[in-house]
Length: 217
Image (cartoon, rainbow, N blue to C red; front, side, top):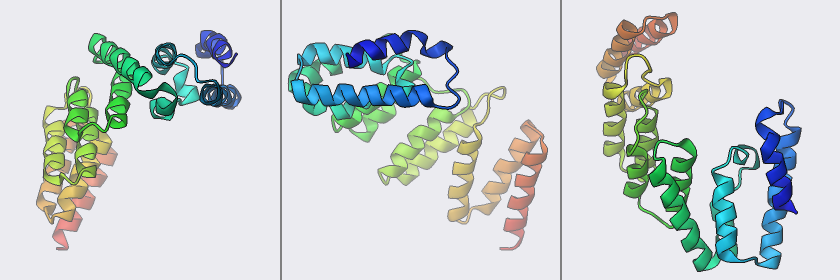
């Protein structure tokens, strides 16, 4: 019943104004009911894996926020293996898809996959504004691989296409690491380059702040 309700909701969710979040709350409650039912009834693992992966790739999952890891006990090894096959196939068919990349990353983490494997998923399709470089940098930093993290972030600044970026959060990431290391001249250089490439009052304020910080050292 929970699946049927989610399927019906999914057919119209993209056309519904849910600015108050009521429908999203219903979707989350249905997803919770489905998980509870699976824990109690223990349905066929392979069939459950097929439904789960299909749902995780669907737009409705933005509302339900179902997590593959919550179903590992329900799926067991046979169901998990089937889910793994389906996720990898979906990612290979569409490596640029946000949902496919996100699901592949969650699968790797659920499997205890290495940081390098997660990085490889992101590196397969780098965003033109450096946003993917930032995600990689954060993964590496979380693994205490700070030097590699900064290298990826710096690469993101270099490779960002002028029409797209670089991403503002990526710039902040790099500048904060430079500042912690006392590399204030490099912070000024980054901010100056950004002002030259994309002039704006905000870019000027950032450069002025960086220059003043360097001058007071």
